[in-house]
Length: 75
Image 1: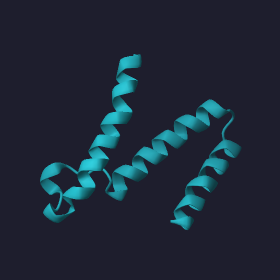
Image 2: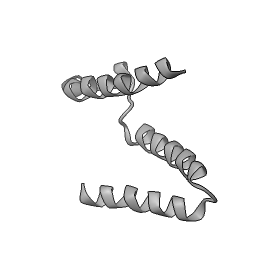
Image 3: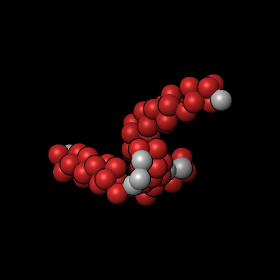
């Protein structure tokens, strides 16, 4: 867990250092974190999810829904 925290922190620092401004760094970081979550297995379709891991899927879905609903209401 500690190494994961260091990895994402240092990635953010490096991204801010090599991009021309903070807005470009935020866009690149958002895309990178989204791809990392997608390919790390956090967003798995319901039919492909193992039955004994359903306790992990439900909080993840509720978390993603609770993040996206306020964003939809803003636009």
